[in-house]
Length: 66
Image 1 (cartoon, rainbow, N blue to C red):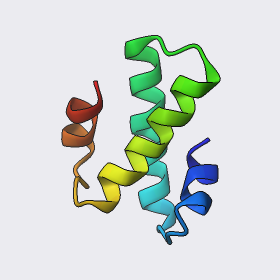
Image 2: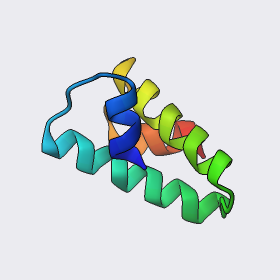
Image 3: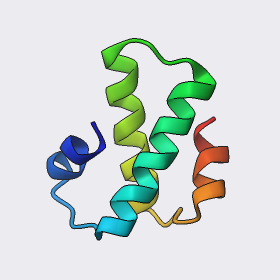
Image 4: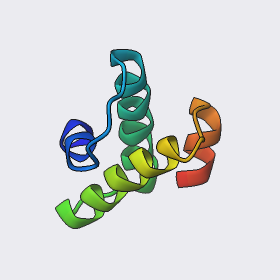
């Protein structure tokens, strides 16, 4: 889901940045118990958008999205 939204956002992230975003996404899905595809898609978009806007610290990104 994260890779799809990176492509949609037409952004270039390194493998490490993609991995960070994926970890944050996976953690937030578990903590918030997100079950539906629309909610997952929205979260993926928010992870990428927040990262692009400068929230690059993994813990800060998680706190922002939980």
